[in-house]
Structure formats: structure tokens, C-alpha cells
Image 1 (cartoon, rainbow, N blue to C red):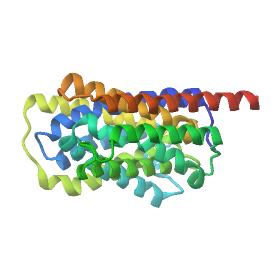
Image 2 (image 1 turned 180 degrees about the vertical axis):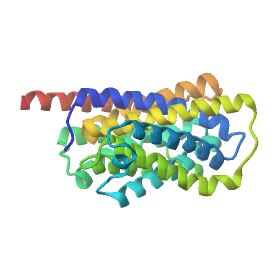
Image 3 (image 1 turned 45 degrees about the vertical axis):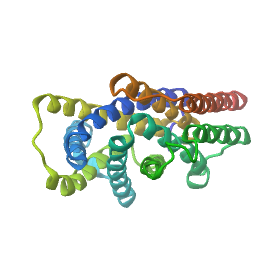
Image 4 (image 1 turned 120 degrees about the vertical axis):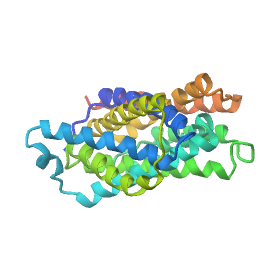
Length: 292
């Protein structure tokens, strides 16, 4: 049984969005020079070492962290996340941060749409309207038939589908497993899978890039733990709109660091999706107040 705390869930999701945006920027830099599988593999090595060390310090140790009633689901969601990361980083190297996140922005909408049939969470008609408005914002960003909407746009879209499913499965396993258990399975299974693939693509790295790799590893651990905790304390459909802020953070990073451009439709679309998220938050608070 999960404890519902909307305000904490929102703060955790905002923090998750910021950390993921910074992580994406570093991934874009490294994957532009080195093989994507190798970059993700090294990141997972650190991730696995961290979760094992953390589990060893908790009551019950590693045995408690391994203990789950849903091993197949835990393995599947961990593999899904590892593959999703590879797909999205590939998108960064082809489209850049701004365009990749413009497409990936549909991920929170996919989660909110599926949270009802998959998790049994109630989504009221006003929240459905907000989700619909958010989709309009995504269409403004994509501009079907224009430059952004080309075959390469399918890469971040596939990533969005995969990450939406990962988020829903994270919420699902949280009903029986603690965040520590999910965190352990995410790191260890992902590390094993990426090692089996990435070790064949090893390349020597420069000293400065090893430093960036270290920062990337830290952001990976922090971001995914925040995400797991967010789904543990609040309804997915209530906090997902705040994942839209990752588009804003990543766009700022793309402009400031990588010299990418921000066109008017992208800015307008981002404003629409964030506005839809804020409206959803307001409706969730009204509903909680009415219950109280």
C-alpha cells in the first residue's frame, strides 16, 4: 500500500525532470564522441555499485533488497529502462536536445492516459481535458509535415512509449515492493544487460570525459531514485504533468551549451503543455480539498 502525498510527489517529479535534463545534456556530449552502448554501460556500472552498497547498509541487507513478489515484472521494467536510455541517447545525437525533447514531451500524456486502464486510477473529465490540451501543445511543437516531424522523430517517440510503460510499471510494483527493492533491481539487472552488449563497443576515453562520465553516473542514480520515490508517494496521473518541465530544462541547456535553436512553435507548445500540467495540479488540489 502506497502513501499518497501529492505535494511531495510534485516536488520529487520536478527534481526528477531537472536532473534528467542535465543528464541528457551530458549524455549528448559523450555519445557524440563515444559509442552509445559503452556510455550507457559505464553509467550502469556505477548505478549498480551504488544500489548494492546502499542495500548492504539497509536492514536486512542485500537479501532484503532482492526479495520481491514480482521478479518478472522487476526484470522486465529494468530491461525496458536500459533499452529506453539507449534509444533516447541515440535520438540526442541525431536530433539534438531541443527537438528530441519536443517529441519526448508526449511521454507524460501517455502515462496519464494509461494510468486509468493499467493502474485503475481515477482520471476526472477536467483532467482529461487538460491532457487533451497538452496533446495540442505537443502537436504545435511537432508541426506535422514540417522539419521536426521526419522519420528521425520516431526515435524519441519510441523512447517516450518505453519510458511511459516503465513509469507505469514502477508505480505498479510499488504496491508490493519498496522503493529500495525497485531501485536495486533497476540498477543490477540494467548493469548486467548493458555489460552483455556494451563491452563489445569499448573505446578509450580522455581524462576530461571520464570526469563528465562521473557526473553522468551521479545524475543517473539521483534521477531514477527521485522518480521511484515520486511514484511511490503520489498518483501517476496527478504528478505526470510536471514531467513536462524536463522539456523546458533540456531546451535551456540545448540553447545555452550546444548552440541549438528554439523556434516559436516549440516555445508556444511548451507553454501549452506546462499550462495543462498546472491546471491538472489545481484540479487535483480541489479534489483533495473536497474530500477533506
